[in-house]
Image (cartoon, rainbow, N blue to C red; front, side, top):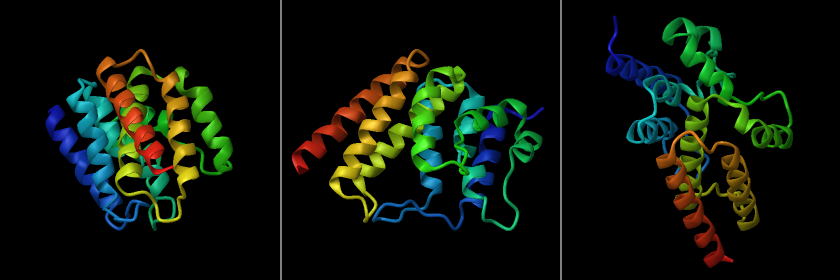
Length: 186
C-alpha cells in the first residue's frame, strides 16, 4: 500500500507534468505549478486531510488541460489517485462551458454545499489567488477588476466557513491585507 507521502509526491509530479507549459496570469508569469504547490502546502500546514492535499495538487489539472493533446479527465484522476480525490477535484472544478459570470455566481451559491475537504481546498485556492493578485496582478486587470475579484472571493469564502478555523483565519487576514492594499492604491 502506498504511503500518504508517496501519493502526495506522485500527485505533485503529475501536476507538474500537466502544468509544465502553463504560467500564471500575473505580470511575473510565474510557473503555474507554483500555485498548486502553494495550495497543497496551505492545506498541509493547516491540518487538512491527505486526500485534500492531494486534490489541492490536482485541482486545476482537468480545467487546465482541456486543450492538451491528452486532456486529464476526472475518470483518469480516479484511476490514478482514487475516487475520493477525483470527487474533491470535481467539487471544486468549474464547468468551463458556462459563461464566466455564471460560474462565479455558482461558486458563491454552492460553496456551503461542498464537502469539508472541498471547502478547505477552495479556501486555500482563494488565499493563493488573493496573494498572487496582490503580488503580481494580471497586466490587463485594472484596479476595479482587482477590487471586484477580492470582493467576490470574500463572498465565496462566506460559504466555506466551518471546516478549518486556521485556514479561515488565514483567509480573513489575506482578504484584509488585499483590501488594505487596494484602498492604498485607490
